[in-house]
Structure formats: structure tokens, C-alpha cells
Amino acid sequence: MAVIGYIRVSTDKQNYKHQRFEIEEYAKNQGLKIDDWIEETISSRKALKNRKLGALLENLNENDILITCEISRLGRSLLEVMRILETCLSKNCQV
Image (tube, rainbow, N blue to C red):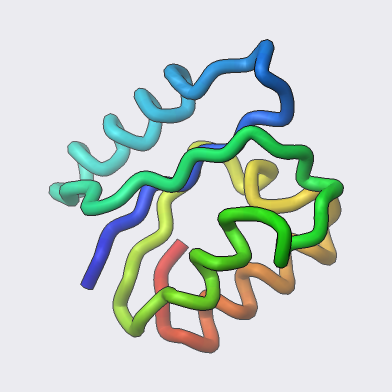
């Protein structure tokens, strides 16, 4: 089981600090240790296959845990977020 923190900012004017802090606090409160961090600066309008999140989803294993500070960091539309969650669920991963 791996615990992965996922952080995405849309522009280089934003920073990762707040998201990372929120994820670390959540993990600490849940008794989890983050094993890996995925950080990317890219618009969620980009195709999933062109984002680090796409590769992450392909490599998720059963019982892995994906933590992000906001569900909106995963995708632009509700439909896209639902597809991503469906992928995680089909692999028996937690989000």
C-alpha cells in the first residue's frame, strides 16, 4: 500500500505550499505517512494522458491511497472527476 499526495496548481503564480500543508495535516490526523508526492503545474484542461495524474492513475495498485486537498484539483468538470474516481474505485484505491 502506498500513500500518494497529489498537488496541482494551474499557473506558476500559485504555489504548492498550502495544498501540501493541508495534505500533510490530513495524513497526520489519519495516522498515514505520505510515501510519494506528485506535484504538477498544468491546467486541468490538458488531457489526462498529458498530465502526471494520468500516469499516476495507471500505476495505482490495490489499497493505495490518493490524497489531494480538494477534489477540484483532480479535474475541471464533474464528469472528469467522476471518471477519475471510478478509475480509483475499480483498482480498489481510496481517494
